[in-house]
Image 1 (tube, helix red, strand yellow):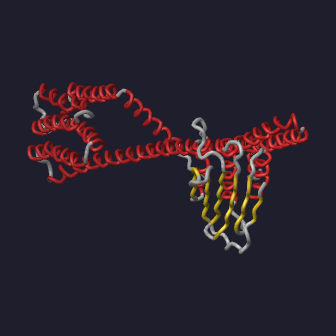
Image 2: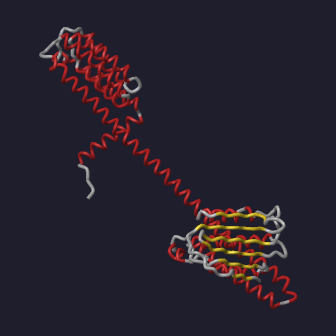
Length: 421
């Protein structure tokens, strides 16, 4: 059960907060009010003759009493900007007050300056201020001894000490509060930065997925459309098959795009999370689609494809997809491609080569743009390596080689399986 503060405590806290608010907004006005109050109190004490009730010497001239009273009260106006100078002036008039035996009560305002010094200045300055305040006390004790020394000095020293400790306590509380406020501000900044980083990472992931989905399927559709255009005049049956393949590829791309966009919906996040991601079992359908677009692809699998983490399977799928898409775009007429998957103890290795152009045209940036960046980002997630570039001479074409480390079972001694079309 939460602790509920007492109504009186709440009232005092609200009152203190209001006073602090006024002090922070208009410090000069507050200083004038405080100084004016004590100047008025000292003037009333002088005019009414009340100071004689506690004075050791009632024959002190009136002008001297008034001057001493003003000298003790007026320095309060500079207690913030020049606290030690204000205290020095007060101590001088306080010494005059004790030495003449007037013993004006307005001399207690020195405690306000002492509190400000403890609140704002270093502790070594506070020690010097305390020693300075002992001068009027010692002068009054020597000039007008009354009882033992400890009866005159010790109570005053205790009062100075308590005021100094109060200033230190308030200062510690303020420092602690400021530290909490600064920590809260830093946490807020870090939270905003984390949110921005998370949003940027999510935008990058979505852009990468959309590039892989839309870029590949549009390349396949473009190849099918070009093939169907040439086949329409000579072989209507082949043209119809191309149109069917275009429709199937378009529907597949639309389904994947909808699944990706569902992630952005707030009303159905769970359904989006349940949608399956492409895996190694979908490579056959991917390669068949590329072949139907007019690119001959030969596949080779070495070793036994043991189970890989879903993320690694998606990385392999996307790298193969992007490499074949680039061949469709930039390989040129008559290009062929080969996909080789090798499973071993140290992980899985994928090599995609083609016999097209050794380098993309100057206007093309797919092999060194968002597609390559996406492949590198996916590879880095699993501490893998990715190598891309022209094939070594005398061969022509482009090569993409991906290696993802992992702990897989030893490959079985089986002959490599090849599929070509």
